[in-house]
Length: 124
Image 1 (cartoon, rainbow, N blue to C red):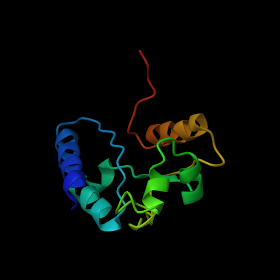
Image 2 (image 1 turned 180 degrees about the vertical axis):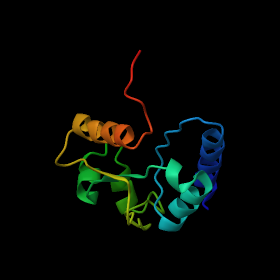
Image 3 (image 1 turned 45 degrees about the vertical axis):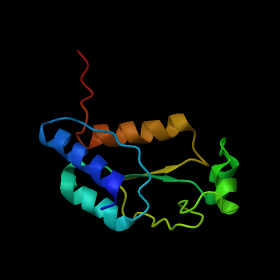
Image 4 (image 1 turned 120 degrees about the vertical axis):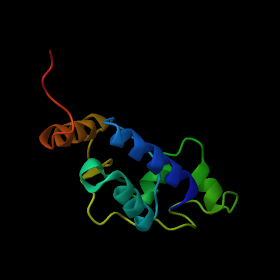
């Protein structure tokens, strides 16, 4: 596993082992690394969310100009430019950031978590 992702996966697995819930927002470009983390945390405890956004849209939305710097070679090993990104084969949730609003995508996540018993809808 890649260094930082390995640490994130390990800490997440420890929290899950002790009954906690973890949300990690990390760019994980390699399928093998994501599979390793899934195995570490446990198949029934991990929800992979694929934020599907075309590279052109990512570049247009980039407020820091990092994609432009990567295209010029200033930033090296930038995912999607000069470093690969392997799309997930079977993510539990796929979010479309072009066609759907942030709110609509958030509802997709909440619905999935409710339907699959990750969160309880009972509020007392």
